[in-house]
Length: 282
Image (cartoon, rainbow, N blue to C red; front, side, top):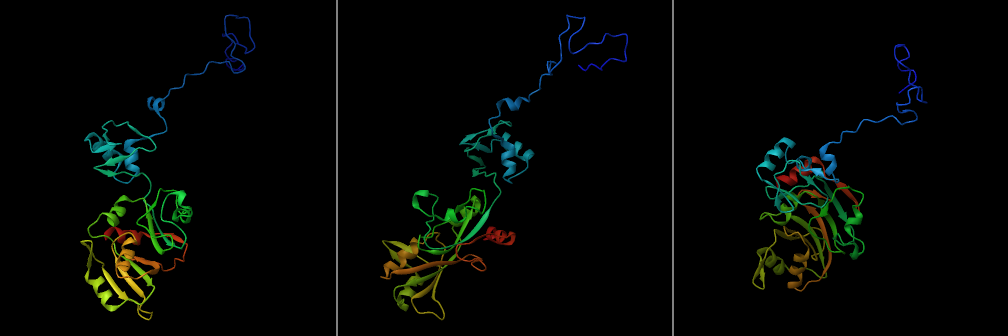
């Protein structure tokens, strides 16, 4: 209490912070004055760094917090495989949250297109040496992953995203997403072999089919344009090895409507809103 406090009321005794005639009073000088007990919100006592489930869902863009509360109460949300109906449940780092069976990701949906050079493996493992993740390390803080694979010595377009719906469109959809490759062979491709590949053929009883195959105009007959919906390049090697051709080069020149225009080798870019919308409509 300040010395000046109450000095204009002579009917009251002045209480000095340094003591006085009233020895029964405690000294409040030098920071000894009692503090009001802080009121701690109940949730804070159990907060271990998590985020409320409804906020986690809302941050993912699935719905609003209020709508999330409704779906939580209906049992539509699971955390690590268990239905959670508690409104105040906190999601911890590493928890898997699913909404109507689909994984919920609170990160902003991110789409990065890379023009991959040679010498980089398509993997998240550091044990593989230089990887495509090194090339897009500065693109975003989101947990993006490549869709499909390009061999270490293959080049061209590779799409990265944290959007599970887009990933499923590439990997699980019956329609798939077409990719166009420029393939260079060790010798000219015979027309009869090209026709067999176009018509489809079987290996060990399994049908091998492509979307399109053609010679590239203005180039030797060992340079081929090949469009497939398979996400890896293993199929390409399987096709040409079956007809006794060795592959010298594989370059992915287009993924659906996405091309290498204004994207030099080794560089990446974020997809535009229009490119993203077109991708979602495929």
